[in-house]
Length: 535
Image: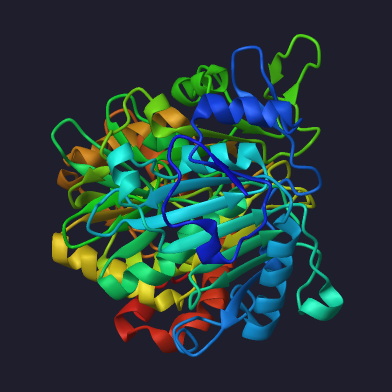
């Protein structure tokens, strides 16, 4: 076995049982990983310098192929079910040994990184990849150690990426040839049969979502930014709600765009980079993110590119709607270098209500915050995902990140409520969806109105205006806001057919109730009482 790279760790691959590989490339820099990925035909360079890779049939996560090893140390702490599927230790061991056999005689790329910007909670991670561009992805998304840190880096969790490996559903007790297997006893994640790099990122998030609550840290699928006065804000939101766009505010410093922890000391980013959707990205609406598509070091997944000119076409969804860009946080001009800030003054929950009945902004009590955090509501429409019909479809993703939450959702929700109460953070529900009618009849909420409402919430002025109690959803809604017409603040007033609004609102209330039945035995009466009630 040969070893190459700027720093070869004394904690070698043999400690992981990875043996007889051809060459192990250790902690290669971005230019070196470019060279290796191009030399191996894994990726191509775009006109302005980004590295473009295609992931084949897997253009997104494979949630049905993710399993957790069932073993005594975690048996009682994992929320077993359709999201957290069990696999027995013997099956895991069998797949592990075959993946390691698959890597024999091949080159591998090793990145030693950290997850977690706060030194008190950061986790040393090792990513072993079959592809060079996957190693660059890990380098972009995780926190790259300094040379001094590398000398003391001893991995506490390892991720092995082997896209060329195929599982056997008949004998491995998995659902397909793809497998994403998490073993907390071995501190090991196995990713096989998929080239989609996001599986690595989300595996790290899943690991921290399990480990950190035991240390009193709330892990969150959210973005975080900080104002010039030092005030911090948390933005929860599912895909399509505007989480990345709204948190990338040139007037505020971006702490991170996707995954954070909330400790007794404040907020910290889990990552060292961003993983943004690229489809139909606008230079005008999202200039900072758009600029990364022309930077050396950015990894683009499944983005269309002209074979001759190497010009990118961000509007082309021929390969997938889920085109992605992975780049270091330093590529964003107003991003934080340290990834740490204080407790949030405001917690924002974003939803894109395609039914057009939720107010554009509402203030939540701690109990309402817990209710809506557990609900994780948004609505999707045709064009956002394949297979969606013409009518909006309600989506409830618990804690705004259900696929990555190994513990019971109530654990995370109770921690959020407690931290809101302890810090006095204001919590807001913001609808970036439709107004004046449902999708197809109404219109999308103007981003200028959403930005004005957020600005007023973040600077504290919205707390000083009169509030009314929404009759349908029981939420505190401001009666006025600078830059926003008064009628916009009351969604019923924007509908021409008031009866149609009432019927639609009542329908959405029913959807909330039906979804929440799964949590009723895990929450207090006060949280149950925070549910919306149809007028």
